[in-house]
Image (tube, rainbow, N blue to C red; front, top):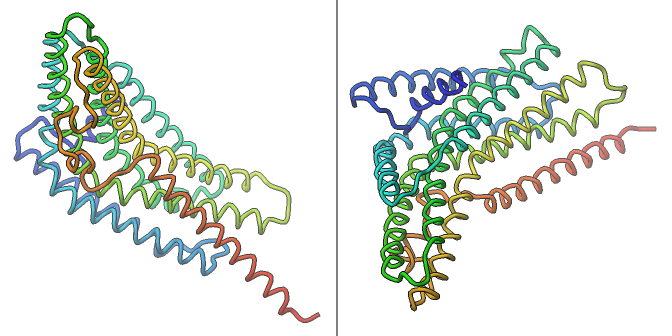
Length: 366
C-alpha cells in the first residue's frame, strides 16, 4: 500500500496535477519531468521507426504509422496544450476542501476510504499486468524484451500516471455529488423552511462542483481525446496482428506461440483498462448529476409546491453552460461510437487482406 501511495504522490508531477509547494519548485519539477517525457517519447519514436514487424505488410505499415503519429500527437499535447490550463487545476484541492468544509458544517462526512482503496487496487492491478506482459516477452526473446516493449510500456506508464490524477479528482467530485444527492433525499415534508434552505445549499454547491468539473476536464481534455484515439488504435493493431498470426499459423501452438498470444491479450486488456480510466469518470459524474436533477425536481414539486422543469433551472445554470464539458465530452456512448468506427475499419482490413490473397492464388499458373 505504501508503494502505491508513493506512486500516486509522484504522479502529481505530471501535466496539470496540483502540487502543495512553492511556484518555483513546481516550475522546476515540471521542467525536469518535461525533459524526461521528451527523452522517453523521442526514444520510443526512434524504436518505432527502427523496429520491423514479422510478416510486415502494407496494411500493418500504415496502421503502425498512424499509431506512431498519434503518439507524437500525445507528446505535443502533454508538452503544450496541458500547460495552458494547469493553473486552473492547480487550485483544485483548495476548492474541494472548501466544499468539504461546507458539507461538514451541514453534518455530512464524506468517506473517501473506499474510493482510495479502489484506486490502489486499480494501480496495483495495472502494475501486475505490465509485469506479466514483460514475463511473456522474456519467454519469447530475452535479449529484445525490453527494447521491443519499451516503446509501448513507457508511454503507457507515463499516461497512466497522468490519468491517475484525473481519475482520482473526478471520483472525488463524484463522491461530493453523491453526498449532495443524499442531502436532497433527506428533505422532510413538514419542514418547508429547512427544505428550502437545503435546496439552495444543494443548488449552490452543485453549481460550484460543476465549475470544478469543467476546469478539470479542460486541464486534461486534450490528453483524454488524443489518448482515447491512441488506445483504440493500439487495440486495433493488436487484434489485427492476432488475426494475422492465426491466419498464417499452420502448425500446432508451441510454448513460444502461447507466450506471444498471452502477451498480446494482456496488452489488449491493459489498453481497455486505460480506456475505462479515460471514460468512466465523466460517465459517473453525469450519472450523479442526473440523479440530483431528478430528486430536486421531485422534491420541489411535492414538498415546496413549485416545479422545476429543466436541470439548468434546478442548478441555477444557463442551458449553454451546462451542455458543454470543456473541450472534450468523453463517456461510454462516445467510446461506443468510436469503437464501432474502428471495428468497421478492422473488418475492411481483413476483407482487403483476404481479397489480396485470393488474387495471388488466382494468379499462380497451374
